[in-house]
Length: 487
Ligand code: MLT
Ligand code: ZN
Image (cartoon, rainbow, N blue to C red; front, side, top):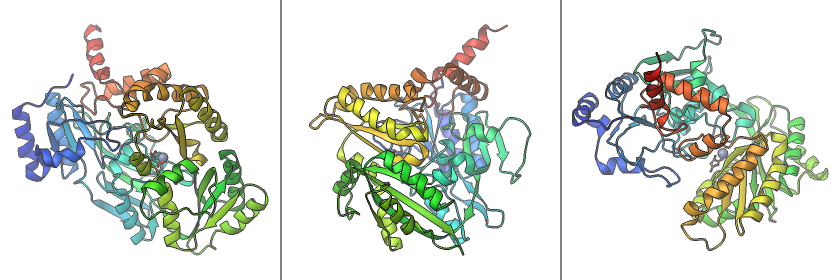
């Protein structure tokens, strides 16, 4: 088990980092000790805010020597409490937010080298100024940081065309659990020197090291975009529509997000300034974005949708006629989590199955959940085109605040069992964090889990890197016990 930092260690950290890099002030640390969903509350012995990779390395070296646990944190927008420390207050919170420099942005090579604390929206703006674009986007873009996006292999709303962070990271710089600096920001397109440590760190949720910088791939700027809100009968109709649009507009469809009427109603009720985009309420809706590069003709989304409506692949559609209207449609989609949060508790799931199987899964799983847990209401929305929806289950009307603690674990186990039976994943894009750790251990394939534990033990034998996230905190300790009995 890691140790709480001694007064001497804390004072060494304070001297090392100075007043801007070290604080124990409860007012300064308070916002960073609770997760975004406000379900986990932790404590930290101190919050460290290094200004450079060298400082991160020095912190990790000292913590390794003293066996002090480190919880790396970026924008604190994890959906699975992946950056919230334990309540015992024994760990140090390592904020990367001060490291927010874009070290370089080269339009010709199409690469931006960003420190871990660069906020996604700032990267979008900097790339746009250079007439380039970083194509990953998500609702938390105003606070999510590059380090967190890498550490969680973030997805978002543009995965359909550009993939997740795994495909967008060219190189990584990271501090490993022994304090050594892995300098992997090289712009080489080809590099075959053994294990892919970059991919190992992407999605490792801070359990194998601290990402300090990433070199990210940029794509050509958008010349024109067309955004539409479409009324649908079902997700099945939605997926058929997506396939039709992809054939009609090759390489243009970037997003296809599914939104049930229940989610739209929550947004309209809780988010000021929003309004229904269609004259009638449809049981399902899709938000579609199609783009064209500079110099190319605007994507003919209106024509394609006209044909789809005639062919019975959609019920109604509204096409944004200005950027402001396009943004208003996106706001409806991106506010779902916030609106759901304002409405009250829900059992939240982030699941994937094979894309073609998702419409059926959504229908059958919703019916099964609502039959098994009387009064519950499924609110499943999100990235239908990726086979990933946020299959959230709202409590019966009038359920008290205890529902989340007392009832929702059974709902979650039921949903995850359905996902496992469908050959799917219980974490499509949010990661495991603390929230899904027990479920991963319950449902994960033994070979996958034991390989992950072996990697964790090999790289972090002291178990100091973000303990209690992704894998149970005992993983590092077991290694010591095991190695003690080995000859
Ligand atoms: C989204 O797709 O809106 C995000 O992943 C957030 C969420 O699942 O709540
Ligand atoms: Zn999502």
